[in-house]
Length: 206
Length: 206
Image (cartoon, rainbow over all chains, first blue to last red; front, side, top):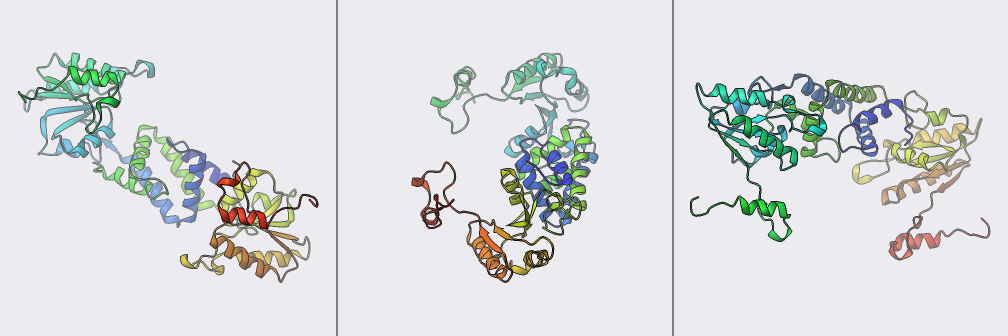
């Protein structure tokens, strides 16, 4: 594509660096901004740079926040004795959307992946252990829920965390792997189906 | 979606104003920018504001340009006696990509659409007539090719332009409507097929 303007070409190059946006879409977006009033572009660029410059991370759970403590950690209504460990911020939003969880979170910032060169040190694991250990003085953490992806990396990280958390007197659980609600047995892969049988839930004691 | 940060929420709102981008995609893009180094966001916002502020339109053909004359109008190798009239900048890029056209362009900025309140005055039609009239002194325009969409609005605009251009001694043509290359007769709509028969090309005289 031969764009007759260096200004637009630069903009297209930058826009198409974003995930899932190719050159054609980038050009469409750039031309859209040109058609619109200048204030729209100004509002967009201002919101982006402001977000990037001023964003902070909660010092307790590493969730995104506008101050050094996120709204979840600051809330008096959240159960501080339960910590749900997730990979990144999007997982926090996903779990929050279920309205099922009243505890707090801990954002790891990724999962252990030797192939991508991510070891335990790159994640906020020490901060989690510290948090669990320190908590025992006032409001002790009683349960750590591992809510990581069902991938090999996720499982490795869960296993590592469970091992490290053993030292502290804390219950470690992981979210259930099984057939999605509304899913049919027939179309579920063997591994999931196998796991869902092994980790079956006892109706009578529930 | 309940985003726990006003900064991110503002960014998401602004990003999702772009065409074809919803809240979910906007959030994904915002979180991507947060994960990346700050220089990426800076480069993006700078490119966008620079484009919006410094972009100019060619005073001859109204194409986008970095100066007041676009590269096509400035080129000595383009045939100034042929003007191809298009709706917007993307059409210029599309025709340029075919490498078939060596003339110049005239970007209307839209088509006549009474429903959307766009009349001939909102478009660069006067500028086109002026251009054709003025050209007669040095390098006279000999042909105006109307390359507008095959919609009702496009056809109305073509008809209007053809009428207005009659005063000047200039050939007016329109791009062929017909079956796409590789297209099958069977699956072509009746209107297109009917037109392609009526406007058939004579092999023997070609």
